[in-house]
Image (cartoon, rainbow, N blue to C red; front, side, top):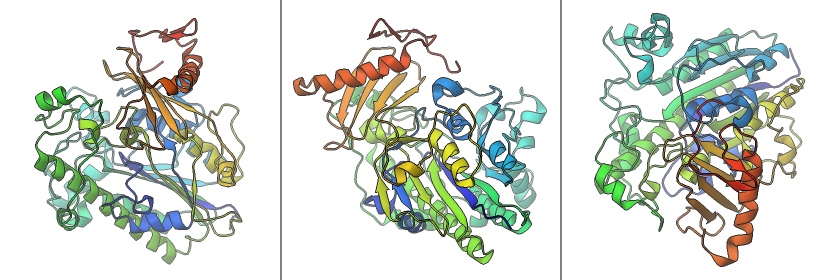
Length: 477
């Protein structure tokens, strides 16, 4: 047996940083994630620097920031050709590595350094078209879909509820709960505990599509939240109410529905997916107890990005606001950890920090090229970085942000619009202070930080000490 800890990396998709019971959310119930937090450390200022699926996973798997991993937005069918990956480095360090659930890489069956992948990427429309190569179609590549068709018949699909994969529309799952993708990821994770190589420590990446739409948790979770009087999303003094009224009726719009009941249903569906996920994580934890591996397993829970969920009349991700870019991050150390537990850390951290943290825990050699840092120093009271640069290519809404522990500066590269928020006194970003006279020195400091980050980039965003709006954006550098 190895003296190295086992590692379980739990990743959710589109899980907001504030949607944990232990963080004081007024509605969301997450007893199992709360327990992990009580036994570990919560990072309150964790971010996804390019808050969509592919870019976020590039940071997670490579330990690089977006300037170096090259993904500054969402684009399908771009090959993953990174020389070092988290799973690959842990495999070289003697770990048995297994991925289960969402990867969202290309080619779709790219192992990214894992010994094995059991795949479910959710519904990705570009991977369902009849024009793509047979070996890349989800009918072929997706293990969950293949399994569901064996269980329910050749016509069965994850889309049978009628819900769309980027929509605010919500309704309960129509099949048995054990057939839900969230349950499937846990079932396959538990099976890995049975068939793992017991002479090696394991690294298991259990990656869930939910609470990413479709909001389709089993009925009992909808019932739980339908009984509550839910708080309406915050709306800032800067919100675009005109677009909300003209486009909000679209089921897959980037703005929230103007119908209050549809907004409430969306919240119910999202929160239901979170508690369903939490209970399934609890099921996995109990199985780890039965397999006698829980005490010697370091567990990390994180998300790739958040969900606006109606904040400021907006939905989905890709935006610089807290609902989209702020993510949950919990590290629950293995037994024998001599640091404190049930603590909260305010350091600015990002998905790029997961790889060096886990390599540090495994006693593995650090690759020469990493932008992330091990978070064990931050856990012990140290600091990571004073500010973080994030960005996302998003057409006319393409944006950059600078996040610090206390505040945030935002620049929209195509329009030149700037925003500034005091995150201590206004955590929901409702009051835009960009024109506040007493904040100009701080705003300029953060603007200069962004200029330094962008200087030398091929887009020409910054030149001669100033920001240049209207420059063409690039999804892959």
